[in-house]
Image 1 (cartoon, helix red, strand yellow):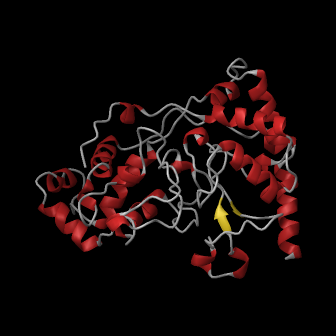
Image 2 (tube, rainbow, N blue to C red):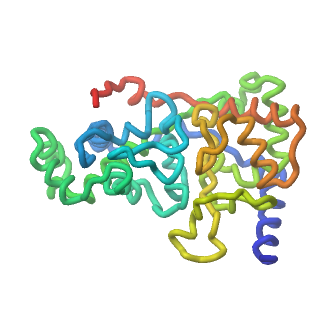
Image 3 (cartoon, helix red, strand yellow):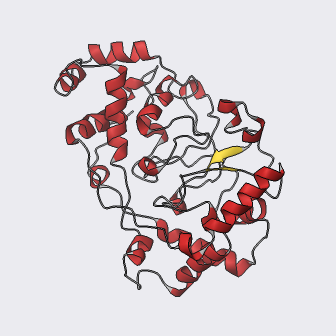
Length: 314
């Protein structure tokens, strides 16, 4: 326990330094992708054919026209079942070092099929999914145009991941500020950015995704009373209890409710929880509000492929 606390303190100290604090970088405006695979992945992302009862698509839980996530603490899946985690946004997930709150998937491709076969989400099985796709009127030809072996689980995961890869949201006001446009943020937002660094928020929320690149225990200085055990469910190591992937703060103003269990309904409440549980020193009202002002500058632009999206009825 002492060793873990020492490592956390060392990490906190290093990441709070001016050197590391300066390493926040803008999201790139584009990524190299295979356009044909992206288009097929998009079609499948929107198609409820992947779910057991043909009523749920990936889009059902990841609303690309809004925040890439949901607006409820726990999304309901097939047969009205409730998920175990607050749905994370799919936007900018390509920059996460792991996928899912508990980090059980190492890549977008490894993540892609999990919701499809999860019994409380889309509730399907891979043999049924592949059978349905092979019997459809459109998918065999689309897959055969890209792959010699046509429709396989591997190829399905690849095209879904290729589409998700392109779901980045660049050109937020903060990105413009980082690129040198000092008028992109007002004085309150700049002060919020200063406090974000000075108070230690940047110790966990750093890098291109302003988060999503490390694990941390939820409840460092105060018991967070989480019913979900996080990484422990995968590793079964005692030290991994209540350890979760730190979420990205990109588009955070749009992705309420917050935390893995959706316990915080507003940004103000979320920041207040973090100051108590993770930083150990509650902030005054003005400082908290300035940080919220800064967080609102992290909302980027929807990708063109989403702006032009036609969503089929489900």
